[in-house]
Image (cartoon, rainbow, N blue to C red; front, side, top):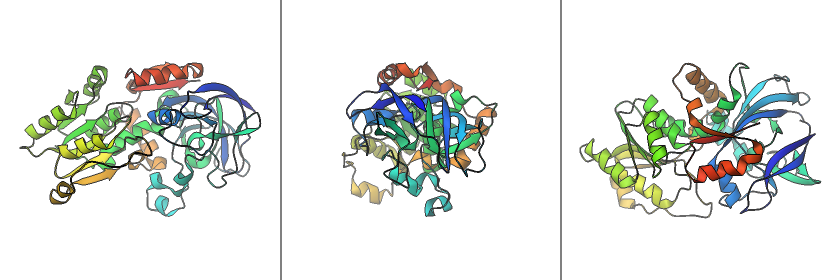
Length: 371
C-alpha cells in the first residue's frame, strides 16, 4: 500500500513528506493506521546527525499509537481493529534480559537504528522508488500507516484516547522510570531534575508520585519552570548552581538524594554538575542523550570513591513496557498520572517541521502529530 511519511534523506537534514510504499505484514507483524505520534528529541538527534543510523533515507518517529488494519499470517492473539501503543524498544520475551524482567535491555535493541527487521538486516518494510527506507526503532510513527513487529506493540482498551496514550511509548516511561526505577526515589527525599522537557517533566511526576519532599526543577525557560510547578515540583530555578544550593539548604549541607539529568542535548558537563549536587551515597541518573561521538565526564574519581556516589544510566526509565504501559494507563485513568496536560501543541503531519522548531524554542512540553 501507499503511505505518506516524514523522512530524512541524509544527516544533517530536515524532515520532508514523501509518498512511500509499505509492505504487508508478515508472520509476527501488524500493519497499523497511526492516530498520533509524539515529537521526541531523539528524532531530532537523528535529523541533526547526533545519532548515526544504518540506512538512509529513514522514516522518523518512535512514539505513537494507532489501530491495527491488517494482521500477518500465523500471528495469534491479534485482530483488525485492535488499538495499540508502541514501545520504542521491542521486547522479544525470550532473551536473558527479558527473562529477568529487564525488557528495556532486550537483545533486539542492538538493531534499533539499523532500520531493518531485527532478525534480518536486509529485510525492510518501507521503500521509496524501489530504495529501502529505514524505520526508526522498527516503527516510523511519522507515517500514516506502518508495519511493525508485535514485539513493539502493546494492546490497549478501545475506549481510551490514543492521541494521549501515544506518549507512553517513550517520554512518559523514560522520565517517570528515571525517578521511580533508576533513582529509586522514596518518601521525604530531595530530588533535582535537570532539564524540563518531555522527559524531565515526567521525572518530576515520578518523583512526586514516589513521595519526594522537595523536587527542584532546573531549566532556563520560564514556561518550563512554571510547568514543572504544576506537575509536582516544589522549586523551579534556571541553573544547577541555585538548585544545588537549595538542595544543600534542606539537607544540612549534604546535597540532593538524587539528581536526574534529562537535558535535550546532554553533555559531560551537565552530568558533572548533577554529580556534584548529590550527597554521599547519592545517585546521579542520566537519561538525556547527546552526540554519539562525545566522550568524557569531568568528575573526580576521588569524589566517586570516597563519597560512594552512584552514576546510573537509565534507558527507557528501566521500564518493562508490556507491564509498565498498562500500569501507567491505570495510573492515568485513576487520576494519578497527568498525560493530557503534557500535550502543549498538536500538528498535522505536513507541519512536522514547525513542531520541531517549537521544541527547539522551548515552547512545548510535548508536541504531538495527530493524523
